[in-house]
Image 1 (cartoon, one colour):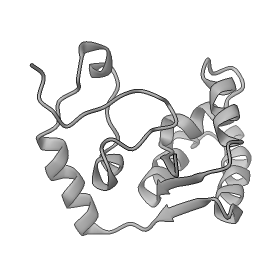
Image 2 (cartoon, one colour; image 1 turned 60 degrees about the vertical axis):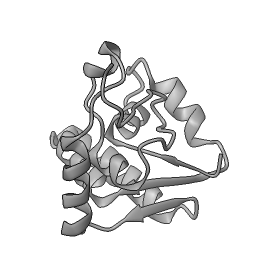
Image 3 (cartoon, rainbow, N blue to C red; image 1 turned 90 degrees about the vertical axis):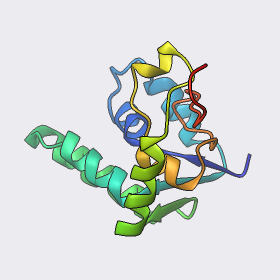
Length: 128
């Protein structure tokens, strides 16, 4: 596996030691491979860390993400956003378990089958 996609769920789990997915996120963050994320994800993560007590953790994580030679941050782009929105309009979760979690639009932009660090499967196929 050459690259994985890190969404807000992954980074929030990485930041919060009480999160049930923290251990998994921490282990996945140490695997030597390219991590793709976007400025959309970083913006959403910053918003999720809006409480004053979360600012320092967010800024430290952001500095680490930017400094990592393994992480590629895709820039904000209105054409990419529209592509993701168009794909999202035709997207259906593959089963009811994935209905509970929203798919990342930015992940759909690049490759809907790209392994996400949360490990949940998604598909552009309609439910049967």
